[in-house]
Image 1 (spheres, rainbow, N blue to C red):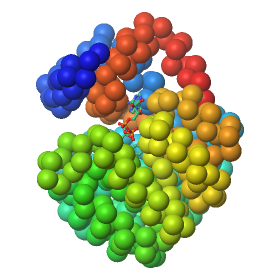
Image 2 (cartoon, rainbow, N blue to C red):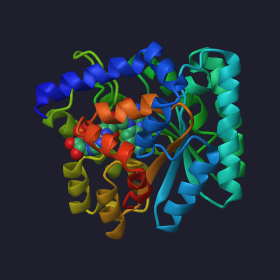
Image 3 (cartoon, rainbow, N blue to C red):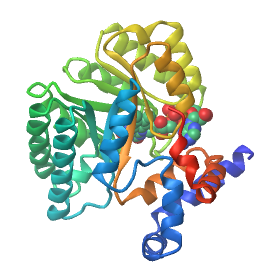
Image 4 (cartoon, protein in one colour):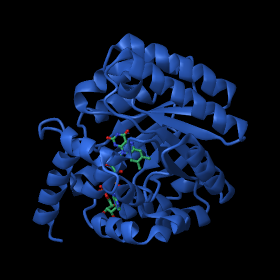
Length: 319
Ligand code: FDA
């Protein structure tokens, strides 16, 4: 695919993904729903907590670290946010009971931020108390730039009391160069990502060598400060550079990749002795997640079609 076509395809797919009528049609279609679920299984462990725990067990046995997210969207009522919080608490307990150590990853909007900052904070505190009991970490994901201030504010208020809480930082936002200074003064792990949201040019850098340079510069700042760091990218050049500089030998540094994306690279890095964390997701809201994985790398459409035709392919993801 050429890059103009890829961009147009990605934008079209993102619009389709956001279209509620199409989503509802798929969710109620007896034929389409199971077919697309086959393709989603490349990126999502399954629809239930049990699926996530089973995959966490499998990958932990192979020597990977684990992140787990219950995927959800559009939690705009207090009840939906409380339901999501309860589900996160259940997964914290289930992983703990199976003696699996994980980082539970979540959007603050999923547990309350879309309703109010206080609701998000109070639900987060419930999760933090449970996570401490079961020796799990929590990692706040970063959302669109309109929410960055609120998310950072909640993190800063809770970080000192809960060192098991970490925060995601988006290298593409220009403000991250300033935010990192404050984050390095707090105890929690920083997860460095490039950034997944479309943002205006004046506040963000698009995918480019300039963004990769910014990513490396933020990464180096965390390394110099000896700060707990998750290098969350599938960018082979960045990961090779990190390996070359021997950062992967540091016990507080890990590389984190989404389940189903570049398992070959994850395995290679793990076999070289790096701490490699695989980000697992589960839940019934897999449709948007599947569309995003294809939109960010359009050639994935071919594997999606192949996964729909041959059920066994997603059972053999080579970790
Ligand atoms: P980039 O997009 O430049 O891709 C580099 C290379 O990686 C590609 O050329 C391709 O080879 C490979 N690749 C990337 N995506 C692929 C795909 N879907 N399929 C196959 N190959 C692919 N974002 C955010 O805004 N907030 C957040 O909280 C998080 N959280 C998060 C956690 C973790 C563990 C990860 C790995 C990522 C996130 N992200 C995120 C997403 C992140 O911002 C970014 O959009 C994706 O990681 C893709 O960017 P890369 O860093 O991989 O580089």
